[in-house]
Image (cartoon, rainbow, N blue to C red; front, side):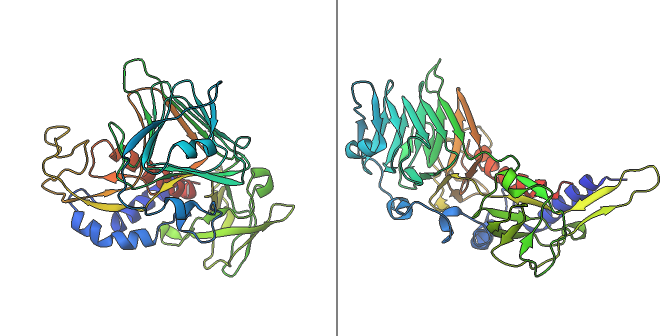
Amino acid sequence: MLGLSSQLFLSFLLVAKSSALFGQFDEDRYLQNFDSIQAASYAVVDDPDANLPPDLLSVCKDKGNNPPVREVVVQADSIGLINSSAVSIQCSDDSVCVIPFGTTLQVDTSLSVSALIVMGVVEWSDDTQLNPSAFICAGYIAVEGFGKWEMDLQSKDAFVYVKDNGAVHSKLRSRGFGSVALNNGDYPIINIKGRDLARTWSLLSKPLNQGDGRIELMHNAILMGWRVGDRIAVAPTAKLATGQGEEFTITSIEENGTMLLNKVAQYYHQSKFVNAPSGGHPALMSAEVINLSRNIVVTGDDFKHVTCDPTLPEAVPGEETSVMGCRCSSFRQHCTNGLHTAAMHGGTASIQNTRIERCGQRGVEGKVSHSLYCSCYRVAQILTILSP
C-alpha cells in the first residue's frame, strides 16, 4: 500500500500529465496555449504591488533590438576600485562594458549597459548599495577568466535584469547570466546569497477556512524570518490533488507569529491529526505553506517566440538543435526565448535564496537544462507543498 507521500506525488503527476505538459512534437498546441499559461504565471516585474526600484522598468524593459556597437574597458582608480555610478559615466546602453582583471566594481547605484563582461570582481552587498533597492540590467552578463561575482544582500533588494536587446556572447549567447571558462585553467566564480530564512515553509497549525483572513502556522513567522509584504502559497488538501492552492500577501505579523492576509481564503485547507491503526503512528494531515518572496531577483524581458533558421549548424547529429540559436527541425518552426543561467566549462556557481523567473530557451541546444532549472524551481515548490 502506498504511503501518503507517494500518493500525493502520484496525484501530482497525474494532474500535471493531464493538464499542462507538452512534448517536443506538440509545438502548435503549446503555442496556442502559451498566452493562457503566461496569464496564469507570476513575475515580480509584472506585479504593480511589488517593491521595484522606481526606474527599473523605464530603464530596462522592452527597449527593442539594440545590440552593442562598442566595447569599453572600465578604467578604475589607482587601487583598482570603481563604483557603478562611476561606471555609468564610461559605459552606456550601446556598449559591452568590461570589468578587467584587477578591477573591483562595487555596486552602489543602478547600472544599465548593453552587455557586461566581468573579468575582475563585482561586489554587491548591503554595505555597497546606497538605496533600499537597485538593479543591473544588460543583454547578457558573463563572468569570464578568473572573474568573480560576489553578491550578498540581507536587508536590501536587488535585481539582475536580462534585456532582450540583441546582445550575443560568444558562448553564453543571448539573454544569459552566468560564468564561462573560455580557456584551460580559467576559474570564474558566481556567489549569490539572498535574505536568509530560517525556514522557507511551514504547516498550518489550525485549519484555514473559507472566509478566513488570518493564518496560524506551526512555526512562528517572525522567527522564520518572514516579513510583511512577502507572498505565501497555501497547498490544496482536497483528495487526489483536486483542490485549489491559494496565494496571499502578508499584511501584518502578530507577536505570536499569526499572519494577517491581504484577502480572505476562497477554499478550505485542512490541519488535523489522523489516528493510526493499533501499533502505527498518527499522521499529521496539514496544508503546507511556503514563502515565495526573495529579495534578490533574476528577471528580464518577457518570453519571445523566435522563427527558426535552417542554416544553423546542428550541435549533435540527429537531435536537430543548435547551440547558435533556433534551428529548424521536423517538429519545430519556432523557439521560445527567455533568459537563462549557466556555469559553463569550469569554475563554480552558488545561488541561494534567490528568485529566477522568465527563464528557459525552448528549442536551443544547451539551454534546455536552464529551462528545466526554472521549471524545477516551480515544480519543487509544488512538490514541497504536496509532501507531508
